[in-house]
Length: 279
Image 1: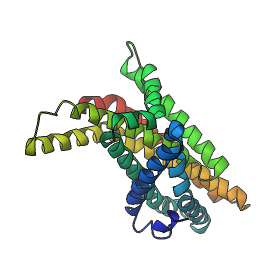
Image 2: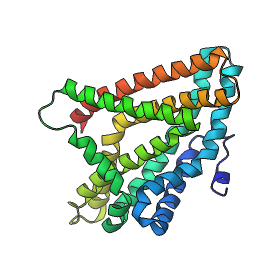
Image 3: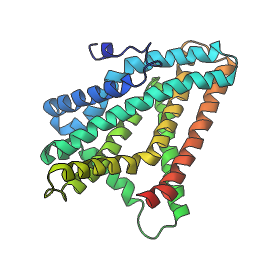
Image 4: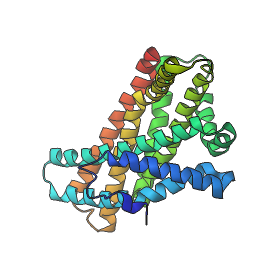
């Protein structure tokens, strides 16, 4: 596959930033192909095509991580090796998100309304469950429960399909990109009278505001989902290779799940108690 050959899975731990550009490039291609070929379902087809491009790299990486569980005896060494994979997965997520945000902001509205219809509906559905007079703790419980639900699907998809969690994560990237892009576009519409350096400064400030508004807590959520997905994928590969009897595989997967739960608690606390005070 041509797209697969653009990035080598064997060098990603040394150059994780390459996955940002890979994710960015995959997303641009997927968006335009999906819109040109199957316009009516372009939103979900775009996600599928991005996943299709990343699967070979991810599957190769997951098989390597499963061997690490067997190779290393100390838990700290295993977690250290897994952290390298987590970093390049986060770069992949950021690349996908950045590409889709740029497309949402700069493409005409009649195009983005078609492509991001499902993502916009998903945002509306989430917001509709957070209405009325609700306490901060009540909001925290709702957000945490929703995050746990997403983590469950990441684990399930990863366990059943091996690298299947990337579908959930790519979908989340498209939803977050829609939210950020919508916020940036809304703010930019109020700056049409500005020109020159003042406009450039304002555009940069709005873009930074939109990104950090969602990614301050979002980076912890995404890290949690990647960690959980990695745990499910490692177990899936171990079953296929008949190595599940190795206690280190189960122990490592359990630790990764616990870590992902802790990251989701941190993300929910930041989203409820810190992000609103900053933004």
